[in-house]
Length: 205
Image 1: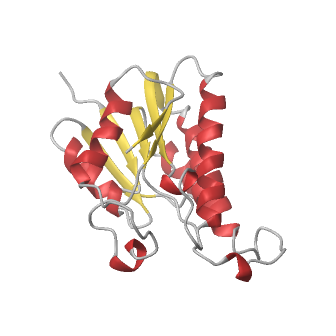
Image 2: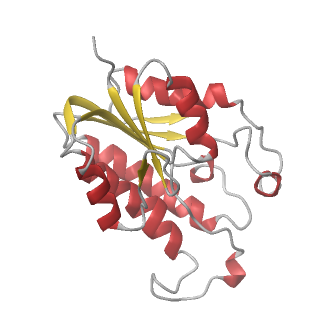
């Protein structure tokens, strides 16, 4: 029996590498991201996103561990349009990029397929300089809950990971008092979304 095809967007990132390691051998993986290696996808560029997905053919699941946003003290954030704003990257890439990925993925998912997005712990536990992350992560989780109520042929969930091993030391320093979680434990949250019947859920990891 052929293995199920799973697209992992953000496979070249810290969490993506842990997820791919956990799924290797069990699934036919397509690793995508800003640096591939199998497929180049830039969440901030809708054209790149749609053309990349169109080239794939049918898949059984899509997992996103991607999404960029800026760290910045609130004192340095000033009123501006999205393109000029400190918040612009998070809004275009992590928030709307993942929403667009979920919307576009419906055209390549087989019936019963699964879409899993990624938010983050700052949606519940704010940090200094992390207002962009908190805004984006909270919005993503609420969107997933709402969108899942309208999906019938597919399941949609989101993982909210804490700090994971392999995160650069500079990023860890911005999260004082937070535990660094083993990569295999973070990966289990994505496996749960992939292999269970859950939909519309936020999985804390």
